[in-house]
Length: 333
Ligand code: ATP
Ligand code: MG
Ligand code: FE
Image 1 (spheres, rainbow, N blue to C red):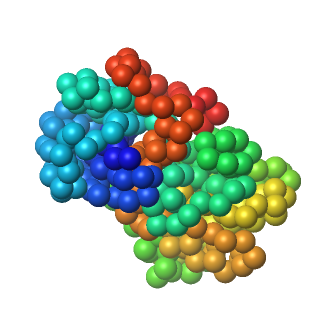
Image 2 (cartoon, protein in one colour):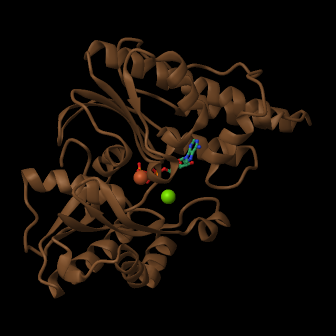
């Protein structure tokens, strides 16, 4: 089964060709990071325009690199949401145009399911599993009973963890996206600043990161007013320690409570070295799978893998009216 998949929910224009829900024949990713960097974050209108400009080229490269003919493609899959609505619509329209003109079935895929299914590329998912989904817009603990049977156990009540990383980085004068820079600096610093561990209620699986983010921003402002210098590496280390303490502890308790066979860690923040190290250190009795870094952040291969399993439940159709939905969440798929 060969699937052509498209991802354009944020600032990566990506098209992939995947085979049988496992093999990645091509995965072309055009990142717009350098363009958005000057604004300190993703500008939705700029992102949409960049997708329009590059989408057809990315389509061609993906097909060429996979070394397949268009006839061999069984169906088309495209990210439907959540994401930036203008950005999503560019990918959806391109995917629909391609599917319609080549008479292929098509389906819309939830972006968050894509992040989870990125795990299936290099590892085998085992059920029941608990997934820690940590990305730019989401922080969730999910129970996965079987393929495409996903239930939300907890979620952030305010900022997503990736968003907190980006805002903390900004307050420290570090470039966008902040996550990778803070992660790198954290490894050169020490946990010297006293920051809160936002556990909320220890027994529940929700998160909150805005208080922690504000604690860092307040320390930075207070130091500025007193003409004191913040040790940036130590602040990064302190922030990362706090974030990873909470994420690892909640994941560990969640996995134990639901007696799972596997822990899946997914989303852009799953690229975080500190998080990977602490998970490995503190959870030894349950298998943990994390995609390699190139499959943690946004790309279309993960959409193609999710689509393969979605197709077993609800097959792709020659119905060319997919709507972009920026509110489509994990419970509504
Ligand atoms: P969503 O998937 O929720 O719609 P998104 O697609 O924007 O959001 P991703 O592409 O999955 O998010 O991840 C991007 C986020 O991951 C950014 O906030 C970025 O700072 C963060 N990130 C990337 N690498 C690291 C890292 N090494 N440490 C911490 N955060 C990181
Ligand atoms: Mg991105
Ligand atoms: Fe994402």
